[in-house]
Length: 603
Figure 1 (cartoon, helix red, strand yellow):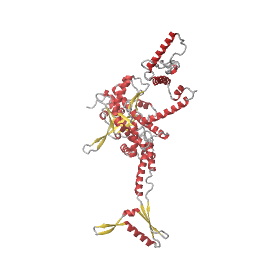
Figure 2 (cartoon, helix red, strand yellow):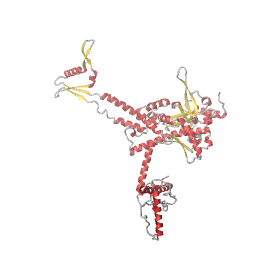
Figure 3 (cartoon, one colour):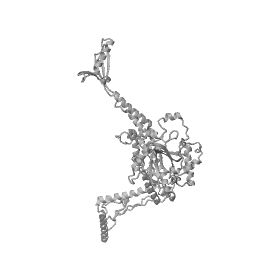
Figure 4 (tube, one colour):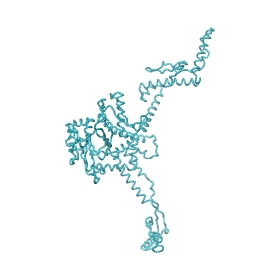
């Protein structure tokens, strides 16, 4: 049954179809039908996303142009266009086929593999590829944040990043755009997005409603109608989609007239052509120059020119022919040997020569030199942003300024690529939350959270370690001076806060107490506590017996000179170290020596 058409649906439906008919290059086609008939779920996604961009463009002076078209507002210089982009086909299907052929080239495929392998990184602890991070200004409680994180992981599983994530990013690099349709239940829209369906890039086009092609209005699907008899495409049916109905991620790069998105692989088009040509030329050169040839220097001393020429031809004929057996003639005959003709050179020599001589002419001597080829291979890798050191599988990632710069640059490119996909996922997740009613329930805003992919860990960790080494070396150099405070250098060069400095003091006390305790174990054994208690009891008993006998007690008591170790800070044995020297605002860590437990060990 045809859906009921109320005033609201009629308004946005007519506006969308009118815009497509007037502004896009499809005006001569018969597709102006009811938008609810072409796309029954269009109304479900209408106004489920943000319209801030649309409102801004309506009030912007730079965006107001009644003659704006999908071609953009950049004037096309045909001469420049033909010179710079002669190989870029404006037909999207042909253009994408050309990119896919380039991606199948061995070196291009290796470079793309290096990129996509670095994009998908699984966290070792959480085993997640992408996580939802909340910003400081997010007012949500911890329970709400936990619920949103669970909902996000459920939603992001629709993309199957662990299994197909590399394929998604590879398509983005090769085709420049990727599209996913949001699937919902018509009767249970409050369940949100239930799944995603990937749409071929060559069948979908984004629609923009301003001259700069920056404000996205929706999408238009070119759906083929197959003739059941001929099995061929009879016509194309154009189906509009709301912008919130599609997850759309693009490369961010426009052509010079802003009429199409260019993928990252476009950067290597020239290098790809040059490399393929140089490889073919090297193969041709090897085939022509590889065989070794013979040089016949024939002595024709004293012969007239015609006689010398006839003599030389006779020798050539004898060399070109070979003896073979012919069944039809019943004997041996001279057969033609074209290989001998191709491999040999014949020269006549005059008086003063050394006689007839045969020399061996060597083949190409530089066939193993591939310097030129490797130059174009490195150029291809540079054009795709992949470090050159990854070209050779035997090379090690050594510490060096050039290697580090290239790897950090490559890591930043990976992060920017991840950010583009994360932004597209964020917009789709917002649509999912609006459909479920959680957006208004939790009073969410786009500034409250961001999806974040795990960055490439290896070289980021390497860079972090190098910066830490530099800070540590500076700290050690400055802290070695007696006129400079160690704590101040910790704040200055190690970027420690006051709380971290105080925590370091507490741990130094615990470490000192632990070292004193270990010293007692080394000198008195594992039951040092019992021995110290026994010695203390003996000292008290000796002091009491001396007092009873009337001896002076001002001298040293027996056993007082026995070395039983001293507690840190001058504290007597069996007592905790004194905290008289504790810095202001720092609570000293208590150390119980004589009891059953010792807090000298770090908690």
